[in-house]
Image 1 (tube, one colour):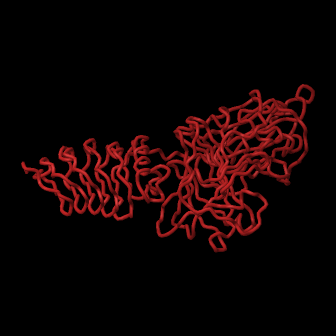
Image 2: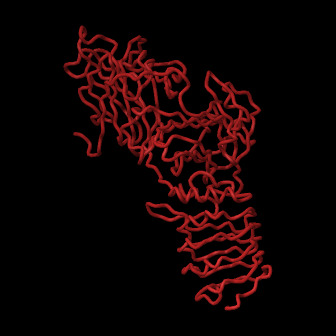
Image 3: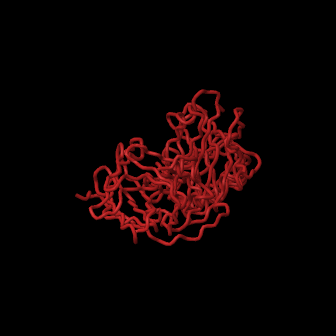
Length: 516
């Protein structure tokens, strides 16, 4: 019986697009490096232009891969749920493979690496736990597929409740994928985070660029029980997801008329939805040897029936398939099949619901405000409001489908500089609290902030006249301006304003208006 959940399959026998062997399009960032480098023909950039916080560090232990010799670490301090973001210019609407690499190297003086979160734009991507890999002196990588929703994309490192020392990152890659690759996913709603990608029957090193034009990593997977591993040299005509042709040099297979059972991935999975792609190509000429036809099931549920495996190749997709715990894939030849079961490669991704984005006008306004400040909070990068547990320091946001900034509270944070007039574009603000800092310059026109209830600017160095437009904000009931350098007169529409708590003492030559 077919399951009741929605399924989406694709059988791909498409023509292979021409493959360029030039460096994959995108950008490669060597985190913590101060100079660029070229490794295996690929250009890596130092990370200073992409991140505004953290400390570059050199590992003292030897490494085999040059990009692992440096990291950027970020301060844990006492601030839980602070994120630190890399901001990269991207092509809006393009689909990106995003890969993060981590190798601890003992930079925190502890035996074990910290555990922390990684975030893409406003979405919590995954927990980073490299403990087991590091114990085997191995690096760890995480890979996802995301569509660029704007002109920039952020990848952030965030401390969670398990983080015991400074989080870090070794390398960050953005590679543009072809339009056809993984295109059965609605990337406006979902991202994909890699669980496993394997070349079956293969026992060598990673298959990657230049074999894979997008530099995806295909790990070896050689299951010996009840399988036959053979080396082949066939020419496939193409696949929707454009896997490298080298994958089809090896296979896992069974004898004539025998089923093949594959425990893959080899570890239990959390209960959620997954994107699955399985790749097949026959090394025989079906015109002379007959057709190889397979039934495929996952955990005893029919996945695809009567798959005709030809030398041209075929791929079977499931866009959202529920998995939980250990997974068994069973390949069974049909009664009319001439030949046993086989499989060449597979990918499985967790389907990740996107967390949303703060509306663009608020993000741009906050970025402009940040540029006018001296010593802004270190975590002012990435999405200001999302994920919820990683809102920027001093920023609170609304609920609902349109995420807006509703409060800006930077009281007593040692912030200087000036207050940009673009703060008036944060039209959902109900409170601005900037007291006890060293802000200077004039107070911008805030008359567009119709929702504003509280404005605290006390104990700063603001100067100039108090805008009379403040008196036109009907909801304003608390206005603290004391101990600044305001001059001139208090606007008459503020004096005696019903329900307004107005504090103005300690300013230069500040006198009531004659009509007050």
